[in-house]
Amino acid sequence: MNLFNAELCQHFKSKQVIKVITGLDNSDIDKILKIVKAAELSKVNYIDTIANPSIVSILKSISSLPICVSSINPIDLYNCVIAGADLVELGNFDSLYKRNIYLNSSDIFNLAKETLELVNNIDICVTIPYYLNWQEQIILAQKLENIGISILQTEGSPISKPYRNYNIITPKPNNYDNVFCSFNSSCLSLSSTYILSNHVKIPVITSSKINCLSSSMAMLYGASGIGIGSAISQINDLNNMYSYIEELRQSLYLINHQSSIIKNKAQNNLGSSIMI
Image (cartoon, rainbow, N blue to C red):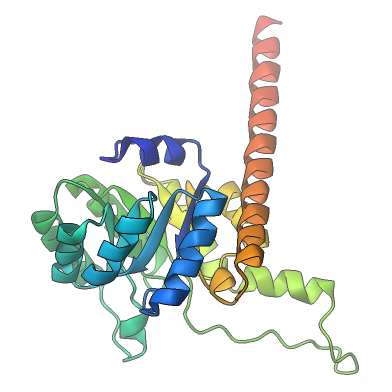
């Protein structure tokens, strides 16, 4: 794993990266600044925001966090790098989905190559579309890794059907329903994370409807980090935003800590059996 940003590289290696998404179509600077403030207080690893050079300039003037911009347009990404963006992401496909446009793997690969030609001295992340079958996702991911893409991101379906409780007598969902909905909204992203993380060596970020429950699953599925946006954007109070991110951070820490303990025990048991 080699990234241009050495600090981010270390965080990805520890598999505890948290990026906060301010809303990739959100140009409300007041809302963006509130989210960025909560992210700074929580010491997340970087910010992902709309590909708008003016907004990038403002954020760079007030925040020390690395700024990532997301767009499907390589020229937009290039202009934001000129404005000071620290890394870029070829993604934000929701704008296309709304117009019923779905790029194939060749389209995405060619856009990634074009982006590399424009900005080849910073880290580039590419989102792997959820609608590609797993074989297509694997092939695309490996091709992107081979040309020098630094990071991959998985996504879920932008349209999630609400889970209907079969117990029609009970108007409110029970705890099982809440857990089911938490994972159901991000299951495609989690599945892709598991598949891709076993076929590439570059970091994989799990995104799309990620929350405190599904974030821990992302780590178990092989993610090096998570992207969280909608769960925070629905919160209006700065302190509550901060508390939510802290809760999520604690969840990632506990999962990674437990995984390390299990791994060490397995290695010790293996060593003991070899000695015997």
